[in-house]
Image (cartoon, one colour):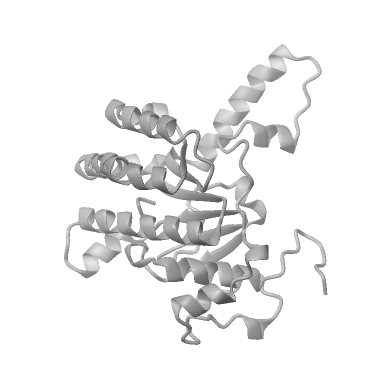
Length: 270
């Protein structure tokens, strides 16, 4: 999940409605015009996958795929801002990614610092607030320093909230939350565990749960990402590799999201 056609239908209410607008040959502008601005997802989360395969297909080093993935990050951010999506969360570096070769990890950390320095003026200009979820304290000191500067400089921005999941794992997040709750239970005799209390002690406290979870590269798994928060998220998977992801792909995901009936365990509207 590092800087990481047609989507499969998980819950559409009508099989005939699942044909992708991309497959119908709509342009980006036409697809954008089809989106109902009154029924947008409030929070989109993305598993950015396929950088390595993108590079391999082009006989390039893996780092070239990660660098190309930075362009896709800009595309996703711009598309969300264009639509007026309030929250975008990107799975940038997982707790499992430390298992990769040290040279690749070092290059990824350097790319992250490069992204922060290059994109900060644009984030400020677009009124975008940057946040981080994950065990940030375990990242290299230089990366922590740059992240803290970026978080502080965008703290008062009121537009899109862009959250980077760095050194993140959903199981680690839950373990950290339960440790805090155990300490709380020892101090408070009236302590009662609840779903709401768990949510309030996750890294994402204060954020709405994702409505739409996008995964690129065609893999059909959550990869330890937002397991608690994504309980009722609509899943949208595309074969597109992350470096090839564009505005149009995100518009397609939102368009398909709006054609689904969200039941939350009930019987729906029909």
